[in-house]
Length: 198
Length: 198
Image (cartoon, rainbow over all chains, first blue to last red; front, top):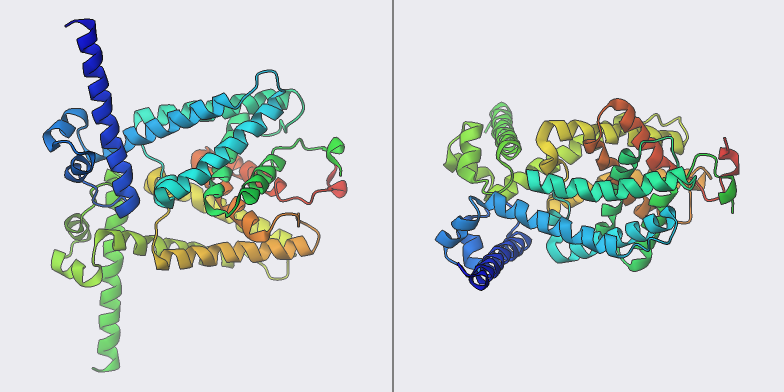
C-alpha cells in the first residue's frame, strides 16, 4: 500500500480507538463501572459492535487502554512544567502541584469512581511505573542535594506522594489543593530541619 | 410471628446478604469490575437469581453494600485500638498505623482494583464520612494540644492521611508500612518543630 494510504488507515484506526475510549469514560461516569458492556461502548462511540471487537477483545481492555492513555497524558503534562535549570526540590514542587490539580480536575470530570480506580494490565502498569519513576527520580535527586529526607527509599516516598495527592479530588477550592501539596511536601522534609524553623 | 421465628428469619436474611457480598468481592477480585452481573453474583453466592433480587435491585447496589460493610468493619477496628487514656497524638498514631495495615491487607485480599475504588451511594458516603470524622476529631484534638499543625483545617488533614496511607497497598514489607506512617505523620507536624530536632 502507498504510504499515504497507510497513514489514512492509521489515522482512522486511532480515531475509532479514541472514540471507544471516550465512550467508555462517558458510560462509566454516567452509570458506574458495573455491567459496562461492549455493546454500550460501541453505541456510545457511534461504531458497530463488530468494529469495536476488531480493536478490543472486551470491555475491560477498553477500560485499561483508556487508563493508559490518561496516565501517559498526565506524564507529558508533568514533564512540561519542569524547568531543568531549577534545583530538584523546586522541580518536584512544580510537578506535585500539577499532579494535585490533575487529580482535582479528574474528580470533577469523571467522578470519584474513576478517579481513584487502579486498573490492572501490563500497559497500565508500565505507564504507572513511568509516572512513579519520574517522581522517584526527582525525589532521589532532591534528597541527594540535602533538600529532602534520605531515611526512606525514594520509591516509597514516590508512592506516598502520588497517593497523598489523590486527596485533591475530595477538597474544595484551589487554596485547599495548595495546602494539600504543602502538607505532602512537609512529609518529605529532611529529619533535622534546622533551616526550616519559622 | 413469634420472636424466635423472626430472629431465624433475620439471621437467614443476613446470611444470604453476606453470601451475596462475599460472592461479589470474589468475582471482582477474579474478573475485575466490568460486566459484573446479578446472575454471576447469585451463582457465586449459591443462591437463586430471584432470591438475590429480593435483596438487591442491581449489581451496583451489591457492590456499594459490600463497600459499606467493609468501611464499617474498619471503623470498628480503628476504634478498638484506641486507649482513651493516651494523648490524642498517640491515639492518632495507633489509628493511622492500623489503617495502613488494613490498606495493605486489603490489597493482598482483593487486589488493587477494589482497594482503591471509591463507590458512590448514600450509605457508603455516610460510612466514609464517619471514618473521616473519626480521624478528623483526633487530628483536631492533637492540634489543640499543640502536637500537630493547626495551619490546615483538620478535615483536609484527615483526607490527606486517609489517601496517603492507601499507598500501603503498593509497598512490600511491614517495615515499609511503618515508614509510610512515619512520613505521613511528619506531614502533620506543627510548623515550628523546635522540640523535634534530632
